[in-house]
Length: 259
Image (cartoon, rainbow, N blue to C red):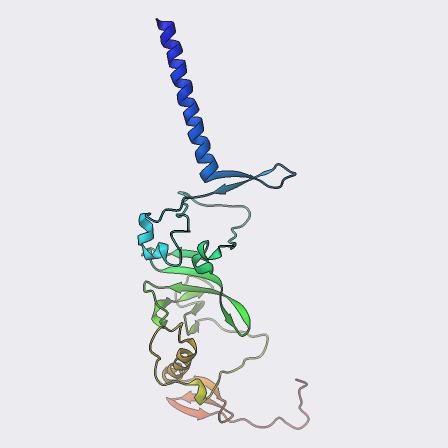
């Protein structure tokens, strides 16, 4: 009797083990893959994959779904630990890039403790001066393109009132600035100024809004604000709240530049 029980136990155990192996193999093949490096070498590389599930609760949160199509985008794959590599982290697009990065542009996002404000890095969202642009900014908790939607991005150190702050339309340098080439003042004329802010989203009205930014900064700029008035071919500076012309004169005789 005991012998029969032993054999029955072995049969049940082997069936359970076989089912476990089949289940494990299914999980391995679907979510964790070992792919050949090349047809000739037989060396392997690892690939992780999550399912596509439009009912995932995180898709209801704008910070997760914004810029993705849940019907085509796999759920977020989470690593509950510190991700470390002796090499590098790389983000690439593919044939369906829109659904592999936010809008096909975002390559990095790091969220603040409010879980809404974020540091964002993106590539090729815009073309400016005939070249593609990589952009880096610190976005606040609102979802628009207004100037107040962007926090300061600081470069240099974490010491207060030191280093260099960058916002949407302004940069503040607490440190000195040393140039190894020329300094060119802003060339501003009537066509570059708008006294009123255009209605609507600033991204959709970028050129018109830039003219309002010019007006606003020149109006509210303190003493020492300087620019080149291209309509009158003169440099002007604000002193004690009043715009003044900067006196210039012709080069001394015999002084010439070859550029």
